[in-house]
Each structure stands twice: as structure tokens, then as C-alpha cells.
Image 1: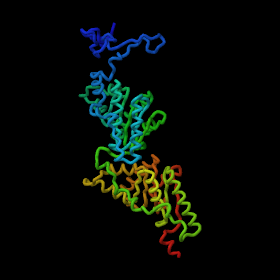
Image 2 (image 1 turned 135 degrees about the horizontal axis):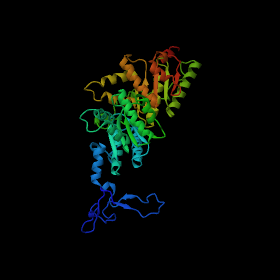
Image 3 (image 1 turned 180 degrees about the vertical axis):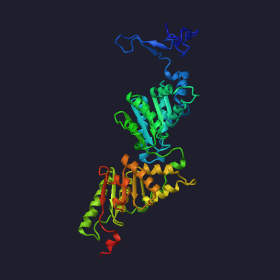
Length: 444
């Protein structure tokens, strides 16, 4: 006897066609078939969807799944219309988008493990996450797409007397859904209750290896350590970072040429770095070593390079030479003095600013190659120290290539930044001990 929700033979019309698919009734109008296979075949004794009626043709089911998924507002977000415009992006930014697209397409074809998409606002994370959901919906899978703040609001609302669903039922639906997409992790109110619920949810799915997609624009260090440890499981989580800017605003996609001052140092190259004139033998060796270190770093930039030394000793010259070399390799380079950087960030708070503060902050933080010249000469306000630390801490955690120059002693720099600069696993620090060039010339 057939289950009551199965169609019966009345689904065959007068002309002998299946009312379900309109074709030959190989399923006898039932919508399912049983294959004639040996007993040891895994398909033996099971019912399968009729091949004449694939999931993608079942519009009613698709509509139900889409309503459940919360993806109705993102129905247009698919892989085919995810645009990577090289003309608006640097090589590194375009590569990050291409890599992210490749990762999520592979996951959508066979959802196993988790995907973690990191990047700034508007870089394309949500589009890619929704595209995964839409791809699986098209295959008939049950998907649930939720922003994390919305999820927590839904859970809180279940405690109200007007709620149509209880907390336990909603929480159980979310944690057990075959594919869960959590957008904007880290944007939620970080109350202890919210942290606990998120951990319970993600830990449940992690321990049961349930496919999950997570997007975030915050640093890993800002997340609950328990959640962070799951997201950083390299054997289970496919983690990819998008460095592209916000694509939703044309003005934000334009390069902010005022921010980098590298063009002012176009004459500063390795070839014209003077290590021989007006110096003692020890100073000559010191400058030669500085030049050699700069050359090596430019050829293979890993971690940070920090040049210490008095004004006019050659720190900025070498930093600019490294930046020019990287730029010639097609890398997006940002060269800026620290006081100028903080001024640009302050100006971005103005309502008339052509670029928002968030956009400018993200641009610096995510620059493919950053040179911070003259660290320690900035206004030492609490705001300035905090913004500078946030930028440098992010680049420290992500090991983004960064060159720093300073005339200060390390002991005089903000303690939090100082702790990063003295980490020899991330930073190469070299002190140029020669006097400034004007003083050296007076030796004649």
C-alpha cells in the first residue's frame, strides 16, 4: 500500500501521459520508481524520484524550499552573475575574488565541511554565500540562510507570548538543517546569551559535520574563542579572504589615489641608494646590510620589515625602493606616512567625504602591500592609537606584507604595537645606525 501522500494512477491522463511530467509514465504516475537491481546493490528495495521528473522541474517544491530558506530576497544571487571586473580591481583583489568563487563553486557541487568567507563590507561575500544556497535549492536540498543578528532576534522573540513557534523547535530546525548559511557573523550584539547560543549552534553542527557557510567582516580574534577554534580547523573549514573593495558604489570602486604618496618618492630606488659617500667603514657595512635586507624582502616579502634609524639615514629611501619593486610586479602598494594616514581617516568621518571611513579603513587594513612611514610621529590621542593598532594588529594576525619605518626607539612606541614589532617570527627589524645624510655631508 502506498503512503497517502504519494500520487496514484489517476496521474496518468486519457492519452496515457504522466500528469506529473507530461511524458511517458515510466513511474505509472507515482512520481517514484524502483530499480531492478541485485540484492547487494545499494539501490535495492528503495524508491527513487522518477528520472522524467528531476528536482529542478518541480516548481512547487522549489517555491516551498525557497520560502523556507529565506533566500527569496537573494534569488538573483547566482554564480553566473558574480562579476569580477579586472578593470576596477588590482591583480591581488581580482585573484582573491576568483579564489573565493572557485572555493564556493566546488563546495556547492558537493557540500562537505564548512566554508568561511572573510572580507570587508560589499566585497561579494553575501552574493557568493547566497549563490551556494541557490545552487543547492536547485538540487532540491533544504537550505536556511540567516544573518546572525536576525537569527538571534528570532530566537529571542520565541520567548514572547505571541510567538507561533517555541524556542526549542526553532533552535532545533536551525541546527539540524542540511545546509545552513550564516551571514555577517560578528555583527551581532555580543551579549553572553548571544555568544552562548551561537556557540551551541555552531558546535552542534561542527561535531556532526553538517555543511555550513559562514561570512564575516571581523577579525578572528574578535570572535568567541570557542567559535574561532572551530572556524580555524584547516582540515574541516575551507577559509578564504576577499580583499576586493565594496563593489556596490562606483565611487568606492575608484582608486583613492590621494591616499598613497609613493609617486612623491619616484627617484628613490635601490640603484641610487648611496652606501659609500661620507661614511666610515662601519657605517658603510651597516648601509650595505640594510640594502641587502631590503633587496631580499622586496624579492620575497614575508611578514613585516621594520627599519629603525635617525631622520635622513635612508629608511624612507629603502622603504620606497621596496614599494617600487613590488609595484613593478603588479602588486597594489600603499605608501603613506602614519600622520597622513590618521588625518585621512579623520576626514573620512565628514558627511561630505567622497569615501566613507569604513571604506578607507578597510582599504588600508587590507592593502596587498603597505608601507607605513614615520611611525611614532603621529598625534598620540587615544583614538589615533586605537585606529593604528587595529590596522596593524589585523595585518599582524593575517601576516600581510608590511614595511614600517620609525625614528623612535621601540620602547617609545605604543606597547601593543611594540609587542608585534619585536616578534621575530613575524618581523625582521634592522637598525640603520648612520647619522642623517645632511650631517654626513658636513664631514667633508
